[in-house]
Image (cartoon, rainbow, N blue to C red):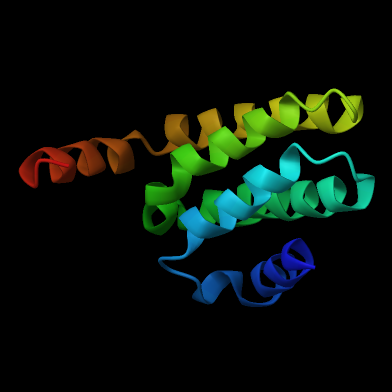
Length: 119
């Protein structure tokens, strides 16, 4: 039920979410290792929506959650119960790499910010 609520929130309000992405990906990370197909599929499809639809257009405001997104995708890739989701998650990790390749300045700015505040 928690995954369904978070998925609904992401699907309906994703453009309005600013600071909650780490928590969202934490929920999906837990769901990624589940053995229930419906839970894993819902979490994966919602994560895929974020990566494919939001990261390309809003990457600079979502950069703080980037590591959490990749960690979540790697957890989907390690779930041997669902090999097609595993393969698709590897493809999404490549999409994440493409986001960085297209907008390297965002990552450079984040590194400068983190050094400035000793984060």
